[in-house]
Image 1 (tube, rainbow, N blue to C red):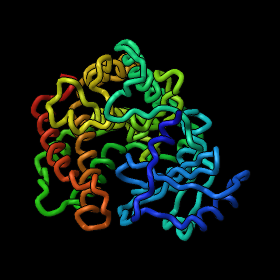
Image 2 (cartoon, helix red, strand yellow):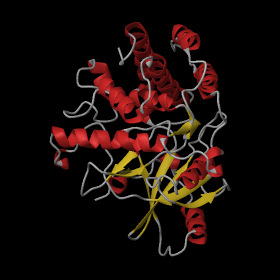
Image 3 (cartoon, rainbow, N blue to C red):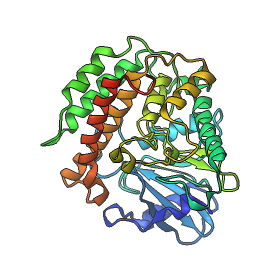
Image 4 (cartoon, rainbow, N blue to C red):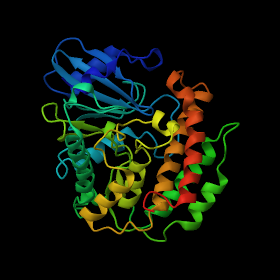
Length: 358
């Protein structure tokens, strides 16, 4: 059974599409579609809108930007499709792109359609029927990390891969870009975290460690596992923020979501992936594993860990701002203001303690 199918729910009223237009477009762009399409929506995402479009037994996935989306480079679905198409020959875990549409009249915004990968997607907890003991969970965990390491090893000399980035200076560009987004996303009552922003600016590395393909949102709920062998990765999803950049920034972004069994209750309650389960690596073990497999020096990782948390805080605040301004009525976004507050506290805690590598 495909979690990518069973996770789909009825479409929210505010996110409905013109089915006649969509059907006409899809049948003109993708060969072999017959009958009337059924549309459902994946509810787990908090940013772009992702739909399941079914023609009988054939399932497609459509992604488009949300209403009210703003910000340079944000929610660029056509760029995401281009990144996926460029990476597919080198990284087989990317779903195949079936169609790209730059006409906003079809679904209200530019969009793309990709294959629907059958398999298991993990959320907050391991499913009861997954059948993995702690040793199996550890194997699953290291396999998922290996796919990130494999991505960081993709040959960047190919022209279509080299075109994904802007070259040296990735860390500096990220600091400037995300602090700017933070200032623009602030709402009344939000802690501006000026001390966190100042600390990041003071300690940020002057050079990138190296340039490689980075996913920028790599976590368990963006990974598809084999239903027959749930330790095996068959797909990686959500390539919107992928680019060429510093791999330690990518690793820090992943660790922002990495909740351990011994973490404080608030962090455990906010988890989006089951990294607290018996057998999962701790954040310290993740860093040690990555360093051993890649030969990377992670001795001064605090900046990357705090920046990953800060970037997640900015994303949560951008989403909360849309809710606060009435651009979405999705009730799950109401609590993002509290999430932002907590992430600010966590940034300060890592700054004080020196982070997971200490």
